Length: 206
Image (tube, rainbow, N blue to C red):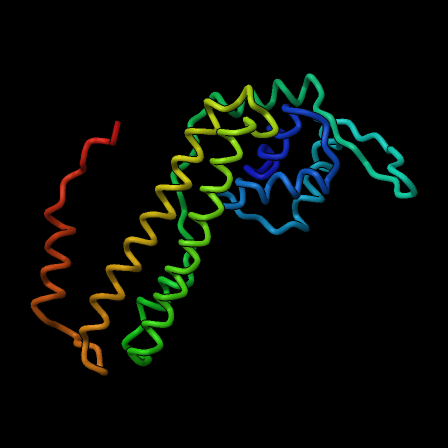
């Protein structure tokens, strides 16, 4: 049982789904904080059935058959037990930032291109989150009774994308002032490091 297995189990606790519907629901928001290959998502429901935590029913939709999965009582018990333990913190997987880390081995233009791509991705994510938020406000989403927990997750998604966007905007300004060969040392770099080491945790916004 992996975290992805429990994600699918949690979705099944809401309603019956086909594997295609589960994949579409993952794309709606979950992929922004738990990205997994779509091929894996098609295997997880089968695992739940093998463990007795879900059932599988074949249905005909038009000319095409599909398998619909539904949670069992044992599955609900397993989900409740999993929720009773704290989850781990975020693990960041960020190829663009890895390229920033070794940017002195390339050119200034390459670095600026990498940062610009990071900013564009963050802005696209913000746009998606804003559209999702609008849908939740207007319609309540597919599960309006869950708006209170969805709002907590949406706030995190927005703040994460906004933090990346702000960083990229700042980094573009800093790198733009560098000579063609990036400085290895300098007062500006020391000031940046100083602001990080001397910063304090602000109170969360109300």
